[in-house]
Image (cartoon, rainbow, N blue to C red; front, side, top):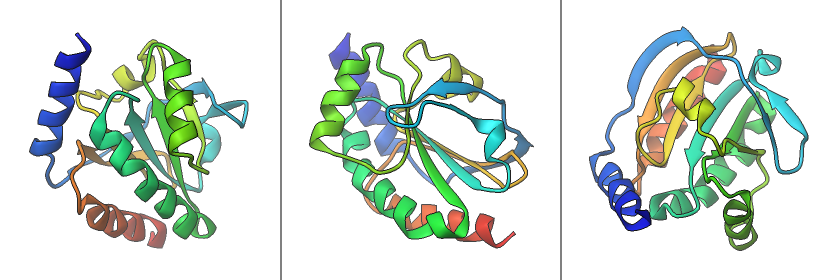
Length: 161
């Protein structure tokens, strides 16, 4: 099963393209995080949030993590935050990966995939960009090298609003 999921993850990465645009209120949720206690999305109004759904078994997710960490550090002072939402059923798998690829942004745990279902996540990784008013504005499925340029464009647009 894990090999099938990994193959789907790789396929999603190959199909990754321009993010789809939307504008709908983001579903509210609260999840436990690795370092910051429970975090609730609706309490982040006023900030631009990138929800990045990832799994420890996903190669493109591991490749993307350092880049997301750089984006978080670069734009945090402008009101931008990355939230990594891990979907592994076993939290220990995520924590083992984070020891190898440490990040400074909050990592939340969605082991039962309730939040990923709220946001219609179909591919690993998937990123959902939420504006300062709490609206989903862009959804990006998969990751391939170079996608971070598109992320920067979206982030800059949303923080300027």
